[in-house]
Length: 210
Image (cartoon, rainbow, N blue to C red; front, side, top):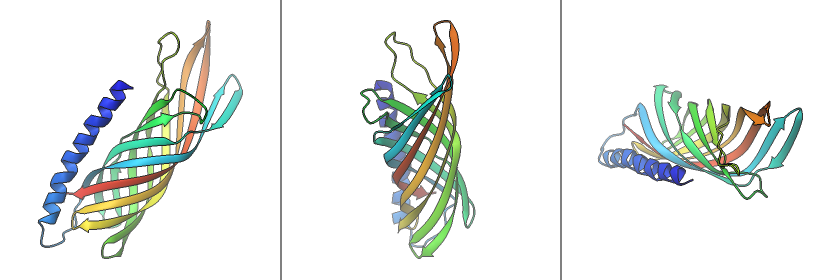
């Protein structure tokens, strides 16, 4: 967890360094010009989720504890109503509601965003976010660690408020499906283990246009 915390702190400084110059530039502009490239960061809260696991033909499902997310994003507007981008993030406190130990999860999704302005400073949009996810569970009693990984996909929508010509605050509501798997050794037997982690996530983002 110490390494994860170091990554989060470093990531926060990077996001601040990216967003601050864009905000200063936007405040100094006298005219509004559409930006093609938008960079920023986001914070997420996932109060509702389900954790599923399957091994040896047996499956189980439990409610998830509230998880937290910090991440960055870069989006390029390829046409007036469509943009594509990349939004890496770290999710913390991935565990069942009654569990003591928690895992972390690194998400590496693309973002495909479609939407447009509905008022001079307000934009509505929807997004899809397919990508790859890697899980970092706690070590076992022997100190061994594993990193189950696999495909993920997210869907949702949001609203952006243009605080300045090239600075926007966004609020989003989305749902993510994460599918991970690994092969574990139980004695001398190799066992395939798979998991599915579904979360409803509220996100607040700040982005600056370059």
